[in-house]
Length: 512
Image (tube, rainbow, N blue to C red):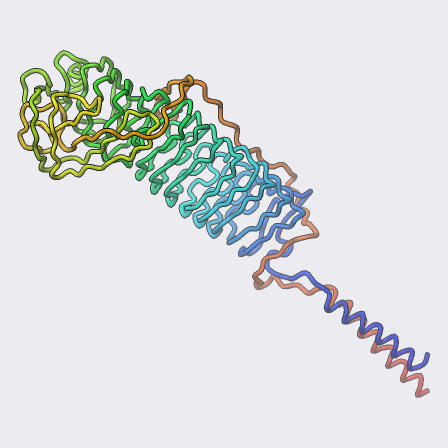
């Protein structure tokens, strides 16, 4: 073989080697061979963390696959259709996540305990946000939920202490128990007309919540002054615990169980003249110290964990009987006491007194804003009416526990705040069936006629095989000990050595 032929062969081999060198190659970073994938199911990630891109071959993320791992971002491909229980639970370094529209099924607690998670874009085509999905995501402040969601599961957002406001998507029919429990910064929530079921403890522990607003046309619920009522506005279901006082809608007949539970800022309360019933537990755990009960009330249930300073009412009424049987101080509004009703008009200024809020309007659909009336220097005019009904202004009385100056002959209301009326606004409630039941504890505020909540997302299926897939998408950050040598380097080196061998052998033959 001539030297020219040998040179040509060497040139071909060298060209082939160079071509292989410049071909795109898989980068070797942390996470290579750290994803266990079997049959399209990613069952485990054992990499060093950082940014992770899930391979497009994955169709399901198994239960607990990334649980507790130090990932900062995770890119979920459009091939993924399901995410299992606690798949990303306790990934405290995860800061944001986008759930693609391809996902049709999610398990419970998928992101529970992700304390560093600040924003979520939920484009998934799921029918529900399952139980505990974002529970204890204490940094979560921004949530975008797809319009296809029909239910929010129990505890779905519980403990999201950075969430300041929430608009429940149109189409959601049910909100589960403790769904927003202990969201301590949540100050307002908007509930759509479609929602027909709200868990009894859905907003428990929301210490800043001052406004619950229900969309016009809701067949089960209504709101007035930030409080939650049944659609006909005859039953007060819930007073947000962030309110500093409340004046109940004049047409209210029933105070439901748990309505004032946890209301630590309401210290003075006057019930409307048409009220007939106070259910058991309606005032349990609240801080109302001065309560005025109208003559029309004929039924008052037991109230555990409540110790008022004084109950104002009428002689031989349910109010007097309730106060006497429970050892509470009772002050008559019609027995010649300093609280006696009078038609004369007086005004006074209160010294110190509880802050009071007037929730105005006789329009059940009103979106009126509550007005905080300060404790010092409030003046009030007694209009001769002992109750708030009809929007009359109420003044301070001589025996008020709120420190008002001696205002004798006024109406039998507690001092500390003047009531202003007249808000008008939203449309009236629809006439559809269903009066709300004021149940307590974990029971629901559900009224008749509401559709049931859809069930939570199903868990993912897939064998937990020990087989590692042949294809992985790698992290962007190299890690010590994760480096491996590309096998193509050995092939290239072999080709170069063979070429050099050809040249050496050829030269030796020419010498011979």
